[in-house]
Amino acid sequence: MENYRTRPKGSFIQQTDWDELYVLTKHWKSDLTFYKQDLHFLHKLLNKYFIWITKKENLDAVKSIGQGILEDKKTSDQLLRRVDEHITHIAQTIQDPFKHDSRLFREEHQGLEDDIAKFYKTVRENRKQVFAITEHIVDSESLEHLLES
Image (cartoon, rainbow, N blue to C red; front, side):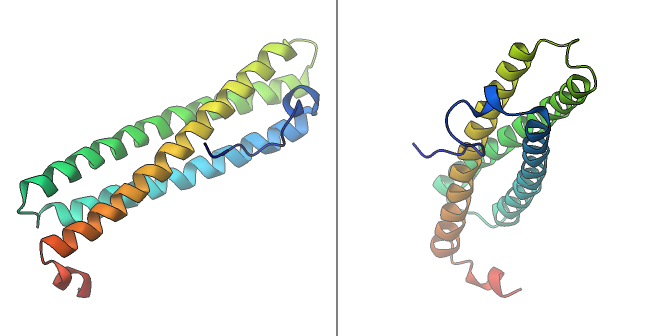
């Protein structure tokens, strides 16, 4: 399995300072925002070809992939909310390091990172499926004329 983590291996989370964790978390937010826009594009792409499909097997495949894209969009919204909360936790910890449990925060950070890495993998796989089914539909439904417009 590919590794989609954005941090160095080892005990980085336990040993790094708060500022570095803050920067890493802001990077996650930027990436998740990009993925959300990418998912919007992929959903729009599927919808563009959906109306021209005449073969049931193509229709079923597009519906299935479309459901995966919608699930990814929901997951991206949830992850963005969690990242925003996490950024708030980091800021609070930076302001008053003795008020918050560092160990719990770092566990939260690692769990969030694991969920984001899983999300990246799922979105990339769904993206491959969207492009594969789009190519298949264009070929099997004789829709080459749509690409010229």
